[in-house]
Image 1 (tube, rainbow, N blue to C red):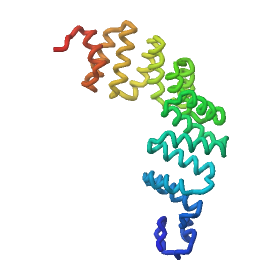
Image 2 (image 1 turned 180 degrees about the vertical axis):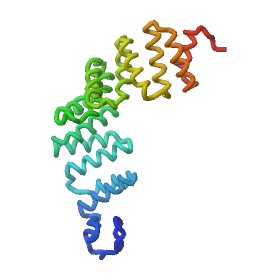
Image 3 (image 1 turned 90 degrees about the vertical axis):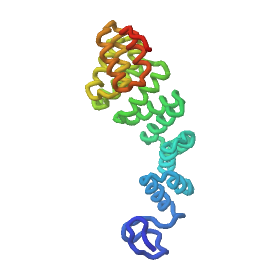
Image 4 (image 1 turned 60 degrees about the vertical axis):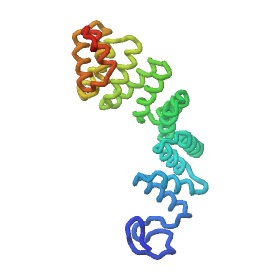
Length: 245
């Protein structure tokens, strides 16, 4: 028979390839884990799930892998179920708490998302991206101060995460702090001048901060980038007193 990993010719009764070590028997736990991982890397998620589900007496890593794959195919309930099983077996694995938190958020379970993401950071303060999702979750829970705290923590640890400035701008807009919103939107504008939504929010912030000329300028840019941006067109028309035909 031919090894599916390296292509070498080997005896059929081998459990592992004698050349590359690839496990060959589907009933072997390590073989199923390897086949699941290989299918995952190839983007064959249904096969990856099938191999992993065949494993008897799954360990924490198998449940974590299943949680990841179910998340990739959009089955959030199964993803959450498997992440929780992984955590039961290995409670100090920060990566699983992070993924569980993101899955909870995507499923609309904001309180659970916050608890999992906070646990992730408690276990590993260097898990920087957890701050990003915490900021979003806290914003949707209406806790603007905690949202700001987490976005600023993200930027202090990783200034390259420019998108945090966009979310900070949105939070400050909700708090009617237009100067802070403008400052953050302009920060992001330095790296992306093709985001129609960014120009719209910046234009609205300028307008609410009584800077009509700048508002008109950036709103025109929003409409140029996306002529279908009805919000930007409506606000621009109001400011320039141009009526739609």
